[in-house]
Every structure is written in structure tokens, then in C-alpha cells.
Image 1 (cartoon, rainbow, N blue to C red):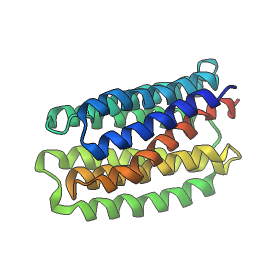
Image 2 (spheres, helix red, strand yellow):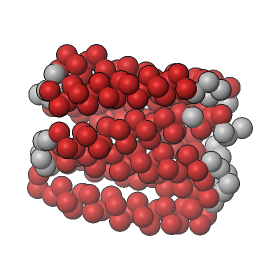
Image 3 (cartoon, rainbow, N blue to C red):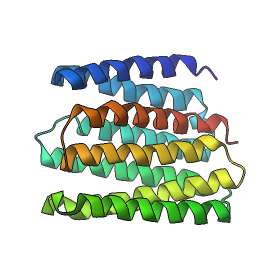
Length: 214
């Protein structure tokens, strides 16, 4: 597997994305974010995602997440934002389907599930009344789905699967906290400064797992 190319492209695109975010350049966002997302799909293909059922589900999840990335670029289009949330939700469903093709460790499911219940409950409580009424159901559903996905990922790793599965899923979950804070609590560059590198790093970890899961 030649992973250097897509990882380097993603890193450079994320660096450009952060510059665009800092400058408030919408054009910069459109130029860099799709490239960063395409890079993790490239890595998935390089990792042999087309060769196994697990890989095909991972590739589907990556593609749906890229669609979500693009849909989240506009800030003043609530309907488009909801479509982006739906794309990510379906991406997590695809990742969950991939993880269900692998052996699952009961201890990993128990520990991961307990951790994710606490995280999901805490985030929803933290958001509280800052969520717009028309987004409450969507955000709650999304948080439950990503919690299930991350729990399954912990189960895969606990059963002897690669550590990248659990770490990638948990990092993805953590990065979503920055999105929630930016959209519903406090819109500021700090959220994207840590959230975007963590998100794209998580996607690269997940994208590389088809080469490790045979």
C-alpha cells in the first residue's frame, strides 16, 4: 500500500483549510475541503477497500462523509446543514455495517458502550437549549448513531482487530464536539483549529483499516 501520497495531500489540504477558516474565505473552503476529503477516499482505495465486504462498507462511509463535508461548507443554509448531518449519519451506519462483519469483543463493547453513553448524554445535556427546535431530533439521532458506531469499533479492536479502528472512531466522535460547539454554542476559529485536524486524522485512520482487516 502506498499511503504517503493521500496522507500528504490530506495534510496539505487541511493546512490550507485552516488558513481559509482563519481568514473567513468561503472560496478557500471550497478549494481545500473537498480535496482533503477526496484524499481519505484515495487512501481507502489504496488500502484495498474494493477487495472485501468490510472495505466496501468503509468506502461507502468515506464517500458519505465526503458528501457531508461539502454540505457543511455553507453556514447560512439550514436545510443544507441538515442534509450534511444526514450524510454523516448514513456514513456512520455504513461504518457500523463494516464493523459488524468482524468479530466483536464483549469487553470492548461493554467498556466502549459505557463510555459512549456518558459522552453522548453529556454532550446533549451541554448543548441544552442552544439547539434550535428543528434540529433537536436530528442531533439526538446523530449522536446515538455515532455512539453505536464507536461502540462497535471498540468491539472490533477488543476482539483482536487493529487499534486504528477504535482510535479512528473515537477521534471522529471527539471531533464532532467541535462541530456542535461551533454551530450551536460559540462560533469561533478555535473550534475548527483542533476539530478539523482531529476529524481528518480520524478519517485517515479508518480509511487505512481495509489493508489491516482481511
